[in-house]
Image (cartoon, rainbow, N blue to C red; front, side, top):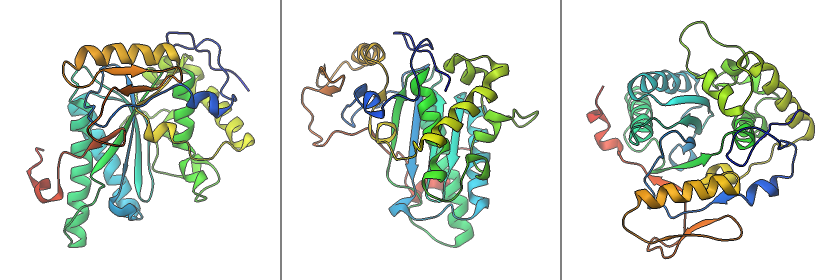
Length: 290
C-alpha cells in the first residue's frame, strides 16, 4: 500500500495508513465541552445523530434534502467541504473552517434546521429531529485526514448495508473519485492539497487506500473520530493547544500530558466531551433565516 507522508507540521511525508490504530489513539486531544472555538483553517469532522437514533433518513428524499442544503450552506458561509455521508440515522461532515469561526455553527444550523423543518411538515409531526448535541473533532492534514476520510466512507460498509462505498449514493465518495462538471459540492483541490497528493492523482490514490482498508478489514468503529476534540501528531496537538489558549481568555487552564491528551485543569461540567450544544430547537426552527 502507498504511504501518505506526514511531517511534524502535519503535511504529508512519511507515515503509513496501514499502521496500528492504537498509535493514532495516542495522538488525541480531549477537552471539556465548554469549547466553542472552530479554529479557522482547520479541518473538522462533524457528527450529528437523529433524535433517539431514530431512522429519520431512511427515505432517500431526506438524505438528498440534507445534501441540497449543504450546498446552500457552502455558498453562504464559505466552508470548504472535503467529504460527507448521510446514513439512515446520522450524518458525517468533513470540512475546513472559514475565517469566520461562526461559519461551521451556521452551516450546521442551516442544514439541520431546514432538513428537520421539511421532514416535520411532510410527516405532520412536531418534536426533535436531531440530538441536542453534535460532535466536532479537529483533524490534522495528511495521514490523519486520509484515515478520517476512509472512516466516513466505510460507514455503511461497517453497518452491513453495502459492500463498497460506491454502492451508497448519498456521500462525497463519488465526487472524490469522479469530479463533477457542475453542482460541485466538494473542494477537491483543497482535499488534494491537505492530503499532499496531486489533484490529477487524487482518485487513483484514494482508491488505493480504500482498497487496502477493505482488504485488511479495517472497518471497526473508532471513537477517535467522534468523541475527541482533535486527532493528530504531537506537534499538531501542541499547536492547537497554543492557539486555543490564546483564544480562551477565561476559564480553566489547559494541560497536556505524556499521552498527548489536552485537558482542563478543572471542569465544572463533569465528564469531558467534544459535544457541542445544539443552538436551535425545533420549536423555533421556522425562525431560521433563508
